[in-house]
Amino acid sequence: MSETVSANKETRGFQSEVKQLLHLMIHSLYSNKEIFLRELISNASDASDKLRFQALSQPELYQGEADLGVKLSFDEKTNTITVSDNGIGMSRDDVIEHLGTIAKSGTAEFFSKLSEDQSKDSQLIGQFGVGFYSAFIVADAVTVRTRAAGLAAEQGVQWHSAGEGDYTIEDITKESRGTEIILHLREEGKEFLSEWRLRDVISKYSDHIGIPVSILTKVTDDEGKETGETKWEQINKAQALWTRNKSEIKDEEYTEFYKHISNDFADPLVWGHNKVEGKNDYTSLLYIPAKAPWDMMNRDHKSGLKLYVQRVFIMDDAEQFMPSYLRFVKGLIDSNDLPLNVSREILQDNKVTQSLRNACTKRVLTMLEKLAKKDDEKYLSFWKEFGLVLKEGPAEDFSNKEKVAGLLRFASTEVDSSEQSVSLASYVERMKEGQDKIYYLTADSYAAAKNSPHLEQFKAKGIEVVLMYDRIDEWLMNYLTEFDGKQFQSITKAGLDLSQFEDEQEKAKHKETEEEFKSVVERTKEYLGDRVKEVRTTFKLANTPAVVVTDDMEMGTQMAKLLEAAGQAAPEVKYILELNPEHDLVTQMADTADEIEFGRWVELLLGQAMLAERGSLEDPSQFLSAVNKLLVK
Ligand code: ADP
Image 1: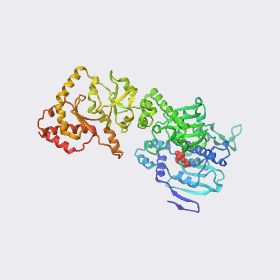
Image 2 (image 1 turned 30 degrees about the vertical axis):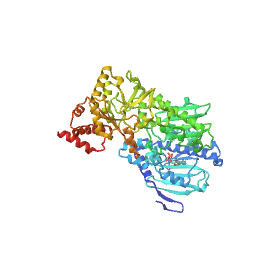
Image 3 (image 1 turned 135 degrees about the vertical axis):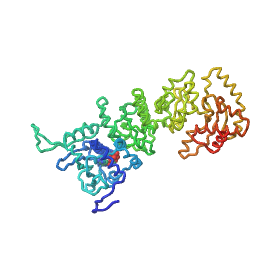
Image 4 (image 1 turned 60 degrees about the horizontal axis):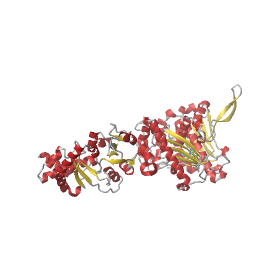
């Protein structure tokens, strides 16, 4: 891959993902050019954070707070903008790793989804986070000069690329520590060669940055004429946003800060900023994004929380402070109780961590509750993006189960839509007199749920049923046993009892029919033997002759499918066959004296019921042959 040009200069090819990213970026982000400044200032600020952190154990690395800053200048003659910092810098290996490859796993897969529809790319790419490479939106060549903190001046490195297939890298002498990025502007980027334009954009993107961001300005005399001299002018307040007073921070500042820490281009949905003193002394600033990140369901998805201790940046991906089912939360925690030399290992079983985690979890759940109360539409847009993740909550977080349950949304027979918009609280409000259970149904898809024969009596009696069709749902229901004091009852389980909704007359009639039907039930069970767990009569059906249900304690169909799909051995589900004695097919079967023909009827009914429940049959040909023989007759 590399070809040596001189002793230390080599040309290297970009990883193919980088090439794709560069191409897409230049083509889809040109309408949002100025963001390159946000990304570069953001990186420079991160580099300073990292230096400060490293200096905790190596104090010789820098001389103190006043030292750090980001500087921007431009030159009309050379058509360049330079962004420089005196942060941590990069070694030669760092440069190759960070500016030639994209380390994130799943990137190739992500890109394969892009570019069929270019108009959507900018959005998607926004979620991906373009970072340093955004320089190529305005530049047709970029030079990076950098030196890692602690290395000698001769151990500087220069990286240069025209943003096509490759880049060069060579050793240089760099007097100062840190990184300098020189953008050689393309025609479309020249609008940034203007002091007011730069100042405008920089102030927008640097207000929340905790170190000084300065621009090189031309000095003018009293009459406004340029004197030919220049001076550095600090543009921002250089106070970390979260340390400021809530009431003084504008929404735009919160939004920009979110973009700085999250790599997201879109505005966040909501946020909460809290300073807490007392037993624990900390500040948290937590955001809920508007869109799910592309890799949220990946196993190695990184948490979006940063940990600061006494305003010093300590680490990214501080996953210890948030349960996994809230992994979409971005933001930071700044603790005054943890030691500065805290490591991931120390965080693992630490009392402070535990109590901050509990507090932050509650905070996020409360934030979501408030959102749901205040703005239904916004909450549903949150649910669409993150509902699946939140459904992991009841299993993971026992102590907040009820709170999480309150945040769940489902489809239901009450609304004629696959959209999951019904809360359990609203279900409970609509419960019928005498109803003490929350009825639900799990199925493969919304259509299968909505048209399930199990719903027939519920429809007839006007009882609402929660319709669940996400893969995770049956698993979720293993952990969610009640809400607001009401038990959940699957309507495809054997324990379902609707007698409370029947009047005395109905009850008496059912009892009578059941008696009459006893022999048919026995005959059916005899024919089926071990193939079913039980056969019985049901009155919950209207237009369907038979259904299968599972025992309350037994694994349900969806759960078994989930295990199978995950490659795990699922115990065989033993079904109970329920016959509707009022259906014509069932009465025909009952009237059949011939044992062979009776068997065919049973095959037909069981086969149908299994198809409706599982979508497949163990022995389709047995079923078909029985059906065909009945048809011929
Ligand atoms: P991200 O910032 O999201 O990690 P970038 O593409 O912006 O992605 O940067 C990739 C990496 O390059 C950074 O994580 C960092 O390690 C390194 N880097 C970029 N800019 C600088 C800088 N100014 N100083 C030191 N390292 C930098």
